[in-house]
Image 1 (cartoon, rainbow, N blue to C red):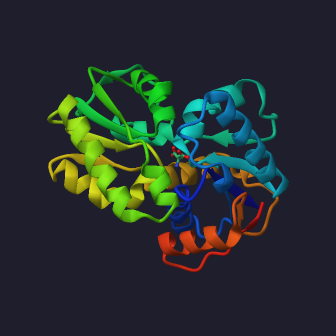
Image 2: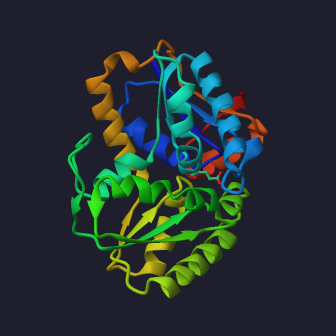
Length: 270
Ligand code: DGL
């Protein structure tokens, strides 16, 4: 039994860490498409082709259920995959919905009509591709009314994190928060809509100020996966081994991952 966790690179490790803690008995197979990161500057066809290739590899590794721990892939490719590509015995889930359910104070899977919610001014930080897709606003509109969303495409942050250049990542986060505040001076909540960004959560929070509630995905996705597996226990696939797969250089990716997770991680070639 194994569940697949996919990201373009290292960011999905924030989700992997949370799901491993929440579901310690489930083996997880992580796939980082580091050779092709970042996805956030690619077009939708490109993201679709790369994501489907990665998900096929995770199916081969015994994962019937794959979590796209990547907002860019969830935004640009998931709907197309669900409409025509995923076979009936497999599932692919994204990371947007748990976040929006938390923001709109809903229980998992509550499909009642949209209603007024406590937050009114929401800052969305995400990759250029996620912002361009408007997928977040679409999912939000199904659940909430009267919420003003201002999106900031955070160019460069994923590259800096993938390169381990945290000084650059910090500077970019602060300048993207400044740019957002020029458009929306007083957000009451902020969404970190890229799984790389929790690595910079302290910097986002500092730049935004303590009064802004920052939502980040890892724990929310872990809770919703736990709930999903209770409702669909058969979706824990036949794989038995936890593994870390990468399309990049395994030694370099392992070093980056070990630094982020603060435990030794060994990637192998996908
Ligand atoms: N971590 C990803 C996301 O959540 C991918 C970022 C990228 O590759 O640009 O969007």
